[in-house]
Image (cartoon, rainbow, N blue to C red; front, top):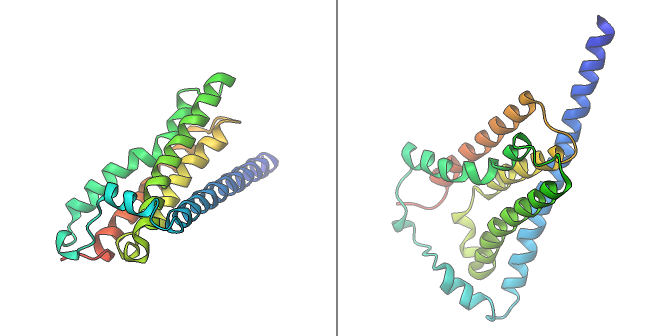
Length: 190
């Protein structure tokens, strides 16, 4: 009896270490992409900066942003949660079982990360330090994005258990809610 418990405990510890390694790899990649794209845009001497700032059209005026309200926090979280959590469903759908679907899922996850990071990083490069006060939630949002990505990275080799998948979704939900709360309270507003 004690041997079985020790083996299960060791397997859970190994699974947790695998998860955190995958998350750290994804989180580091997301930040590396963010900083790399932002630096390229910022260093473009107006070639990318000007058109991107016009395309993005961000208005950095605290008077345009409402004061913090729970409804705004929940709306932001409801918008961001599917973007960050959908890769968990790839394992549920069985995308890891066949090489073709695994590759297609890899491409979808990479495209999602690239699109989200590319947009934010381009804005950071185009607007520079003036944008930083408006994105205090970014470390938490990137943590959630990396959590979803790392779930797929793990699932592509071995399916997560239902419990592991549920824990991933709950941790992503916590990161998304925390990011939305930080954005509502800390970012400049009326």
